[in-house]
Image 1 (tube, rainbow, N blue to C red):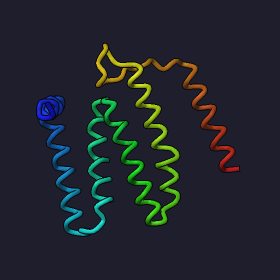
Image 2 (image 1 turned 45 degrees about the horizontal axis):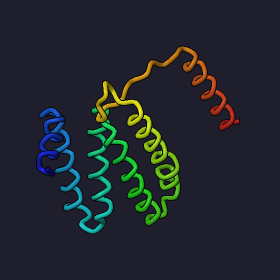
Image 3 (image 1 turned 90 degrees about the horizontal axis):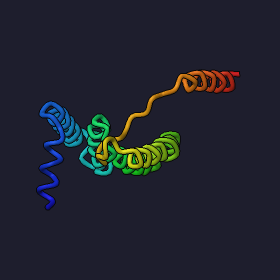
Amino acid sequence: MLIKKFGSTILYFTKGELALWFISVIAIIASFLIFDKENFLTLIASLIGVTSLIFNAKGNPLGQLLIVVFSIFYGMISFKCAYYGEMITYLGMTAPMAVFSLISWLKNPYNGKKSEGQQAEIKRYYYHDSIGGCSHIVFLLYS
C-alpha cells in the first residue's frame, strides 16, 4: 500500500519538477556533508523545506502541512542559535499562516480533489483595502 501511494506521488510531478527537487536535495546533502556534518536538525529542516516548496508550487495542501513541520524545526534551530527574531517569525507568523492555508485548502477542494485548492476571485474592493491597510501600517512604523 505504501509503495503504491509513493508511486502515485512520484507520478504527480513532471520529470522536470522531480529533477529540480532531486538536484535541490543533492545540493543540501552535499553542503551538509562538506561543511557541517553535525547539525542533523538543520539537514532535516532543509529537506522538509525543499520538499514543501515543490508541493506548494503544485498547489497541494501537503506543502502547507510540511511548512508547519518545517517551522517547528526551524523554531528549534533558531532558539538553539539565539536567533529569537527568526523563531518568532516562523512560529508566530509562518506556522499559523500555513495552518490557516491548510484548513482553507481542505475546506475548498478544487473539483472535489483534496490534493488541490479552489481559487477564489479577488474583488476590486480588496485591492483598495489592502493598499489602504498597508499605507497605514507603513505610516505607523515610520512615524
